[in-house]
Image: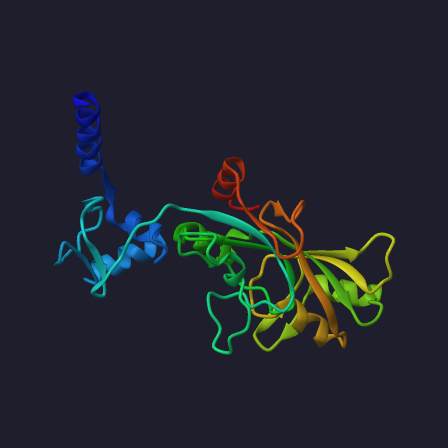
Length: 255
């Protein structure tokens, strides 16, 4: 019994000695990325044990009380989830009209506070990542990293080869000239089914590009995102990423 007590006591002491950089702690909480955390710290928005800390590189003990804008922030275990998003589901943590969200599909099944990476329209289906990793979220959504996204697109009529060329060269929208990185007809299907690759994360970008040329988007399914597919996941189902997948996401900036 004495030995067990000594071991437990030693474990508690070791835990108390553990230190972590303040910006990493904030990022692990899901509040922001580490770069954003540095901005919050230098702006005097972060307190450690009720004292404002503005020095970058500050290390804290895991038992310290951390506050952002006078609200206690708790660091959580980082989790990474892939979901095959179903139709009629909002890509958000909540909805003012009480419509179903992707978080509702995880309710009471995931302890951490997670959020979707990027956004899929309500009726767009397919690969969606969710996490509480602020750094990874920023990297996956920032256009400079050119994270590959591939969609299976259905439009209301056959797409001409001429329009295929226009969509890859670029069409002018209200917010600038946009183009698909690659696109092709789906093998064995009608000419109204296409595979589209794009890295832009602009709102409703695929829908707007086809509408510009007179096509109506009927169905949109994301089949690939940054090295991940929905293989083995039925619509509406999800799973945790394995270690290999997490390493791949963090290592390659051009997947």
